Length: 364
Ligand SMILES: Nc1nc2c(ncn2[C@@H]2O[C@H](COP(=O)(O)OP(=O)(O)OP(=O)(O)O)[C@@H](O)[C@H]2O)c(=O)[nH]1
Ligand SMILES: [Mg+2]
Image 1 (cartoon, rainbow, N blue to C red):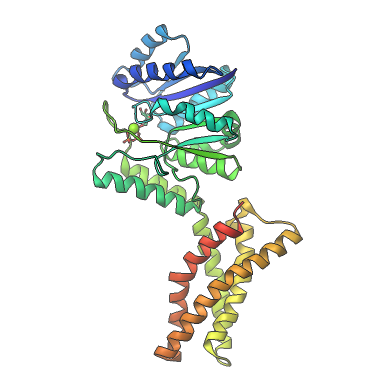
Image 2 (image 1 turned 90 degrees about the horizontal axis):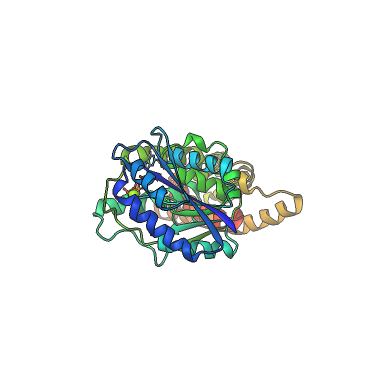
């Protein structure tokens, strides 16, 4: 029998917590292989959530209430998990909002994925079968979709599809592996930081479609401005894409110097193509050492194989630049070559390479 600890962070959820806990208990009557403990982490909610939970703990013998000062969602999860390790011998954790936005009836799907070998399962709104509330205003929908997309592309980690979902089930090893340093993210950024660390550590992540419901009782605690600011700061500090751009600038400098020298002697299209070959070498080394250090390719055989692969995919970038500069010079004259090269790199080569690197070179 596995010990499952469901951490339920609450702040002013008096009107949600009773029915939700009742529903969760009902679900676990059928999940007989698992022994559930519900750990409510309440930050002294002024609405008296704690009192309701205390009453519930008389009805169910598997509810523990922790009351602590208000520190944010991430801090509540950290506190709950550390408490569980100290007193409850956890095997599996569940993270779930206490406002009914996460449907407890989905839990058997999460456990099915764990049993099939996943280490971490996410309730995803952005996969087929998943959704955000239809009655949300357009700004709210955009905020949610754009936020998630910025995280995925900013971090250069396209999978899983839903990074900001707080509905998650994971094995205890995931927490012990990622926990170090997470206390910095006491608010909602915790979810993204947690997931990124789990991904980097190589845990197997699965997604189940989730129809994210709208809140009926109580108010949202998210402060959008703070949330966006913290998320952007996190991405800036941890973005593969930004590191990739820095390496790209170095490669670009190598390319420019070589091309500027050669263009005095040979056709500009060829000069740029040669310059870009050297940029490719600089890019491969720089990205391997720094940008994708978490997926670094090592060993001479692997490195040379991957470099050939890299060269192969980079031919696309060489051709793009050769064609744009070649055709552009033919249209607008030789003096336009430099601007044409910059245009080709900024708008065509950067997205092309980033996609290829993630998809084919440093995939895992
Ligand atoms: N203990 C604790 N719980 C919190 C805190 N902030 C939010 N929560 C809880 O975390 C869960 C998610 O918070 P919500 O405000 O619903 O955030 P959200 O679901 O991302 O945003 P909405 O879609 O706007 O509701 C809820 O159960 C909240 O009660 C906090 O500072 N401390
Ligand atoms: Mg909510």
